[in-house]
Image 1: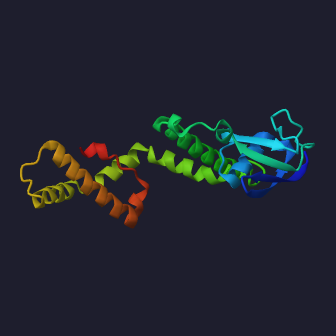
Image 2 (image 1 turned 120 degrees about the vertical axis):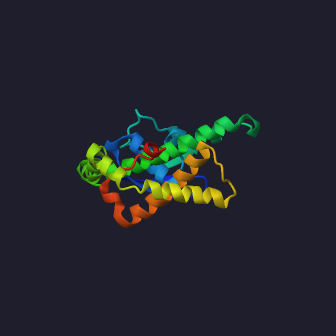
Image 3 (image 1 turned 60 degrees about the vertical axis):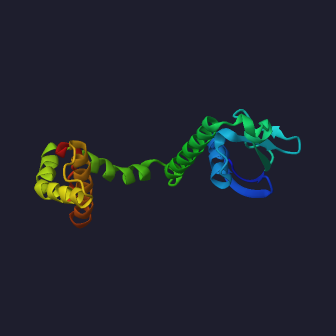
Length: 202
């Protein structure tokens, strides 16, 4: 493994990348993505004056220190009319997925091991497990003032001139009041570490 400083040119910009050759091309593409916002799947990396394509089989220790980034879409140069709404949505989804993967990669590699990441995630895992406890769930449900919320829901409907609401309208109004109550209670008491299943009240 060799640590190298690479210069990546993209359009009119230059980016410096510190790269450990032992990490492989996928990691290099993730680093380039974090600088250029070009998703790894859209990257075509060219090395040297010969513009040799950098692939998984390339010797990353021997390639030129000056690289050029070309997006696959730029090379294809498809007419605008070809890109329909479905293609645009797919492109956006790929970009969002690449951004998420890059962020996860940074978390995993920040400390050189997965131990730090595990220590950060473990408390949240324990919290989710706690939410599955039936006793805690039942205690949370009993803490909800159902009668008071139902009354507020009917009052809100009456203010809108709806004095004979249907069941769906009542359920909707009740859910709004329940959400409002939950928000206020969560802010004040954090619901005592409990989880409330809203569907139980409808």
